[in-house]
Length: 419
Image 1 (tube, helix red, strand yellow):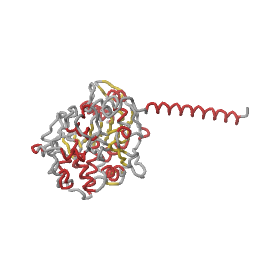
Image 2: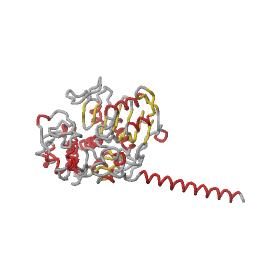
Image 3: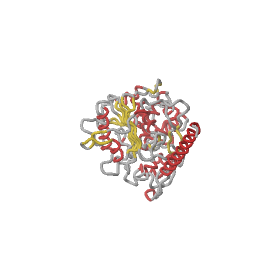
Image 4: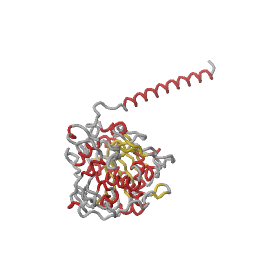
């Protein structure tokens, strides 16, 4: 047989083999991507079904796109050569980070040091192209959006909620200044107890249509435009920090009223397009059309890291000042809260500012945090961004040695390794 014929024959066989492999791989991927049985309005938030649900939010709940626009995605340096595993000190001995991720229900982890990606790994059903629910990391993005709107003079942080949204005048937030709203020092009687079915945060889930089932008995599905004005006031609470998800939704309503734009479109125009996002993000929408700024955003791991880089670089992305430098400096330079209501790590003075958690380590480290294990850790002194997207079985952990405290230990272990 002539050499050209042999070559053609081998090439054809190779193509057939490659095609068969591609079909087989596609079939495996399709099986892995199937909606798991039993996933419904009562079960999607919790393990083990949440691991699939958090990466398929547009199939679980109505969502509005946060468009990335047409600009070329802004590259993350060294992403193509970042390690997908490394050894860290864990529980007193060297342990593979991939193993710790599985133990901690981490679906995606991206670490950037000195402007370069040093680690990127995916687990569960998360992929580089697939979005993941951010829960309350959404709040930090809401705060950055508010910073942009305020910089353009469209809101005045010394004015009250009622000044912008008359429908909230008689609510728990009506007389509060926007500055206090951003810091969750408002006077609403909001209760953030995730374990209590009758808490405000769980009744909001039911009213929004985010949660269904027996725990929602007696709560009409009305949406936030009806639910939020009915939340009462606790005047003695005004001026003291207490974590309240509804407060972020109130700020989103203010931003819509002040600009005449839907909240998702504001995030797209003022943040997502300007950080050079790689993919569209999304945000869940309730029955009344309210976009859930307090916890409904879903985005890719890499684009969430771009938000972290925006904060690390004091509001600059590329050559553009996206958020005022003064806003970021205000976040990272605070002395700490004198009335901190939670436990604090030894030697730290935590605080909460503009929908961002201040670690209070004296190094300017700040975090965006969400239930079920979502995190952006920004450490200016170490020039580091660490992003974790997770699917803890319940809001606060739900498994042995899984939760916020262990997550912070993991952050420190990663920092120690890359330093």
